[in-house]
Amino acid sequence: MKKIFSFVFIMVMFAMNTDARAQLRQSITKVGTTAAQFLKIGAGVRAIGMGGAFVAVANDVTALYWNPAGIATISGGGEATFNHAEWLAETAYDFAGVTLNAGNFGTLGLSITSFRVPEDVVRTYRFPEGTGERFDASSIALAVSYARMLTDRFAIGFTGKYVQDNVWNETAHGVAIDIGTHYVTPFNGLRIGAAIANFGTKMQLEGRDLYFNYDPLAEPGTVDQVPALYRLGKYELPLTLRLGLAYDVINQENLKVTIASDAVHPNDNSEYVNSGMEVNMRNTIYLRGGYKALFLNNSEQSFTFGGGLRYDAVGTNLKIDFGYADYGRLDNVQFVAFTVRF
Image (cartoon, one colour):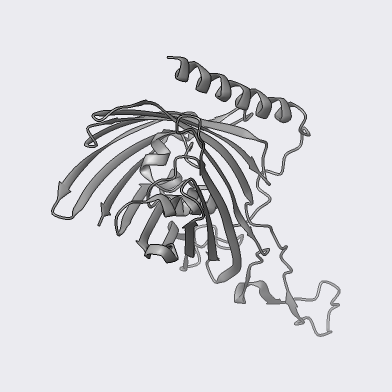
């Protein structure tokens, strides 16, 4: 019981400090000023069920997204996962990743993130019912990760990624890196995680639809077809700093209860806190719950929950997980994932 109270005290002070800093922020945030917004959608049903509080947990293949240092803590030869969600407004989100334990060299990882918008009719001022053309939009991120245990308690990891946004015939490209650390403290297994994600180049849309012929100063009888180009702006990637704590308040052979909390500082919004917990029964049944975006004003994010089942086969184990995230007036999102550890 003393351990529980100690951890709760740390979490409360952690949250109060974040809230205090949030009160000092400017009233004007930078919402909607970054590109590649799909990079902010959390990967992994387990993390989603825990309210996105995962940077210090980070002990499975989805650490590729939350904290690359965490893949160094995965036991066995490696792990692979596929995560799908029917996202808001009929969009689709997918994440797939695999890790490979390379022994003393460290742990390697590959991941791909995809976001797709369904096709729609191209409409213009002159043709409000449609021009006969159709357009869509999509985004993709390809990433390579490496992590290593520097001591028996401390790990560090790195991710390099290529990011691409597509809107009809326009495309934007960017590259970025993630850096993470994971530390198991001597304080009864309390874990500390920190990660910075999407530190990289700016992105700018380019494509043939930006070219046109027009001269606003043309007079009758003069040349009015002048090659021109719409000049679009360059936008930062959604840089995010996460700092988190995780602690097993119960750690027995047939029952483990983990609680976690993350403080998040994005470059396009105010600071907020994610909190959650996971109940692991006999390494077979998992129950999770959490709350996203505490202390964030005007947020539609709130409660999350989920669960999972694990089945051990010869030399491997299989997991299927389900997660649910409430988005208030924007409805909700369900996630499903299949994971295999080998």
